[in-house]
Every structure is written in structure tokens, then in C-alpha cells.
Image (cartoon, protein in one colour):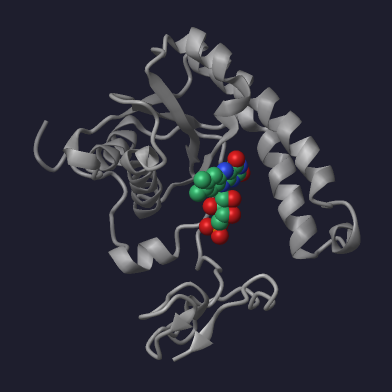
Length: 247
Ligand SMILES: Cc1cc2nc3c(=O)[nH]c(=O)nc-3n(C[C@H](O)[C@H](O)[C@H](O)COP(=O)(O)O)c2cc1C
């Protein structure tokens, strides 16, 4: 294999800052596999992530189209469907603006429903794991989730997309048995990947002055202003975010 043959199949032309602000949660995929060399590049990005003391306790099970992979996807699909059915009720997705066909709420509900209904057919499922070397600590996720974000960013760069979910939790016992995951290893997340139906685009977040403080809690520095043209979510109500003032 020449150096050229060993490089990215899809050209990486997205700048880092643009990429990270346009990497959306992609839950709808074209029904086609991710080529192995692209998958290699995406998972290589995962292995470049930082971790505490550079221990690299992250491990990734990459499940594509084997019989075992299909079983794992099907197990998680059932759990995800149950979870979403419950959340749909609890979070009121079928009341208020949820019943207006084109409201953001009903669009989100439709995407989620389609996602869980088709979960067993996602092109790639990555189970993110963390090999523990000590008792669980609140910060241990910091040694696996940066790698998960690297996966999503690399997928974005290469024309693919995905989303990190906690759906593995609904089938953890069965997944451990099926995939021979050791007891000292935590299942940190289930990432689905594929070629997006639709496309990435600017993520929508609350304005940065709600999230960035200066010298005091709740006081936002004057420079903390979203760049012009940033897609923002509605400002949260004072009750939701009571403390912010401008310095
Ligand atoms: C810790 C964490 C857990 C998440 N769990 C789920 C999940 O279980 N199911 C799901 O569909 N998306 C899940 N997501 C994706 C979020 O819903 C998504 O990142 C968020 O809505 C922002 O979407 P956007 O980047 O497209 O704006 C999770 C994200 C994170 C960081």
C-alpha cells in the first residue's frame, strides 16, 4: 500500500473550529456501510484522545455487520425503544406544541422515533468502554468522553456523522455476556455512525454569556459574545439561569 492509498478516502477539508461548531447529533443514516479505511481513520482519531496520566483506559468495540454485531444492535434497539416510549410521555412530546406537525418538538420526536425504530440497522455501533484501575470516581469519564467526541469530529470531517447515546445501559448485562466485556470495565456509551441523511450544520446553543463567567460566578466578561451569525437557542428564563449579569 502506498502512502497515498493509506490516507483518508473522503477529503478532510473542514477546519477544526468550523468542524466543532457544525458537528450535530446525526440520527438518520443512509443504508450503506462505512468503508473500512474511513472507519480506520475515524477510530484512529479516538485513539489520539487525551486521558488522565495518558493511561489510555478507553477501549472501543466497533460493531458493523457480523452476526454478533447484529445481535448487539438488536439488544440495544429494544432498550432504546422502551426508553424513548417512556421519555415521550414523561417529557410531554405529544402535548402542547408537540402535536403541531412542524414544531421543533414534534420534529425532534419524529427523529427520535425513527432513530430508535431503526436502531438495529445503524451502519456502525461503537461501544465506548473504560477499563477501571481504581474505584469509580466522578471524573473517570474524562478519560473516555474526549475520545468519543474525537470520533464524532473525525466522522464529521470525513463526511459521516453520529451521536453518543446512553442506550447501552438498557442492555448492559446482555451486552457484557455477548461481547465478553470484563467486569472491571465500564460501558461508557453507545455511538452510532453512518452517512447522514441530510447534513451537518451549525449547532444551536444558548448564548455564550450564559455559560462563560469572568472573575465571579454569574458575571460574564464583556468579550463573551457569540460571533456574528451564530445560531443561538432562545435565552433561558431568569428562573432557569438566574445568576448571569454583564460585567
Ligand atoms: C452524555 C450524553 C448523553 C447522550 N445521550 C443520548 C441518548 O441517549 N440518545 C440520544 O439520541 N442522544 C443522546 N445524546 C445526544 C444529545 O441529545 C445531543 O448531543 C444534543 O441534543 C445536542 O445535539 P446537537 O449537537 O445536534 O445540537 C447524548 C449526548 C451526551 C453528551
